[in-house]
Length: 222
Image (cartoon, rainbow, N blue to C red; front, side, top):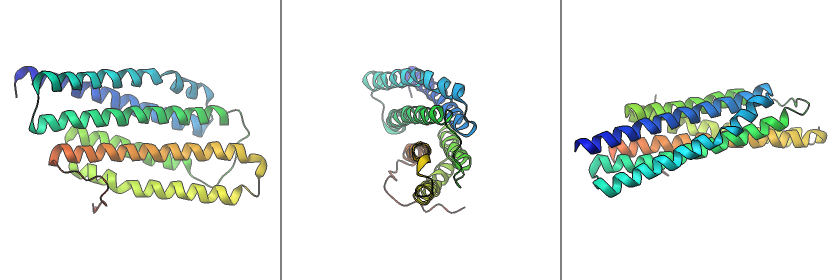
């Protein structure tokens, strides 16, 4: 690899990791704001959305510049393609964290609704998936990437469970419908973050193995 290209790719890696850490932090803050009913923390997440948006544009521009100037091939080309896709996923993760924060800001003004659903547990699992997908990228660890893919079904099941709980609770407490719907929306946003973590994991598999695993069942076995 030419030295100049190597330097630009390393710089791109550093920017992507910075953006990844920021996205992880936003998700953690948004989830905590919801669980703890903390309106100030929710507002902080919403105010900080521009940072991830700006990084997404900068990283995309860097990728396009590398493609135009160096015309990379083989693993270098796969890396740039993977970065473009992961960059988009991370930006969406940031947006979803803002959506959760908006739900948290509203719920902080309402009386706490008691639903038999472990939102904090779901949030912790999603954050682990996101963190593991980024670790898989850093270490080019396809085994960890496949493990992330395998966890997506668990989050989907939790999201369906939340719908079922809502369906049973709503007729009994219709006065709490608005709060329940905001809670349900937050759960749906968490499920979407898990989907994006899965996308990142799939891009790691593509980067390392040159294998497209989207839309295929995960056969990973612990």
